[in-house]
Length: 383
Image 1 (cartoon, rainbow, N blue to C red):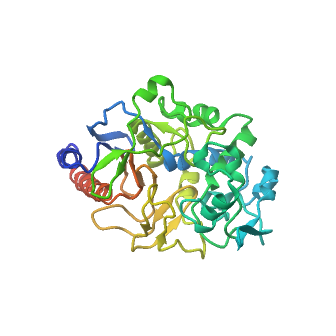
Image 2 (image 1 turned 30 degrees about the vertical axis):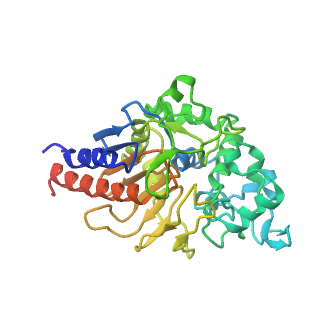
Image 3 (image 1 turned 120 degrees about the vertical axis):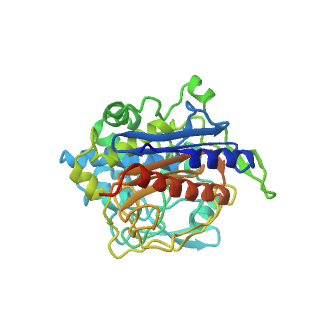
């Protein structure tokens, strides 16, 4: 029985027609390639999207290639490769408007960068960092200025999970080890091997004409053009948020991970990366936004979770949905993916809408995933 995407198509078309989104696309992929794809509204088959934090998994894949080659140790300190990291201190608080800084109690490692436990944060999810930028005038990562990566730590490395610029530093490590820009390295070792021909940190003028515009959810639920966007130029290839590409390209990346890393990584590396590496550290119950225009508060799923090398992990089977051990993540413009190796299915959902974790997009995402698994079950008879 073939994969019937009727339900998913109706879901996406309905989301556009009721005004939930202006454009949206979905792709279901198996180890052998795409099973279904559909674009609705302003989204077309050749539309480009800001991958934002979906860049992180791809940049981490590059670093894992160096681990495989014996050129990078997971437990090496970051400063042993990037000496400038040693200058980062922990922001403990403020004396009036003066940041109170101290040396970290431990040294951040490469593994901690991959698991967001290196002590680094994001200004839009951390009140201390938000205030730091306000009182010092130092740029944040959305400025496109590389100096933004020198903002202080918010925790001692290895003590807490904190979403932040960890993968940007990981990208700088890849550049240091390869002698190439991150974009150039990825093109040679990830994009071209997988046929990701449209993915880039620097979209051409022609590609920008195919970039879905960013819309902003208004208080009355309607949509209006957003004033927030990635910088038109960046001083570094931001491994944490800077890539653009088509949904088909990201589907090729998901397919490679479903397919034991075929073309980019060894199977043992894939298996290792999709295991929980947080140890005793727990994920927070809520990511509290300090910038409501960019992100809503993000509550954690009420199921066991962890973090692998570059991926959020669901550690329990979700009935009718993903399996335990599924890797996933998202981008701030409400883009999402999951990689379920146990059931051999992955999904990508793309729109360009702020703030992140939009209720109507999340409802669409849940409907999409549920419909995808119903069809996978129908298309692949249980053995």
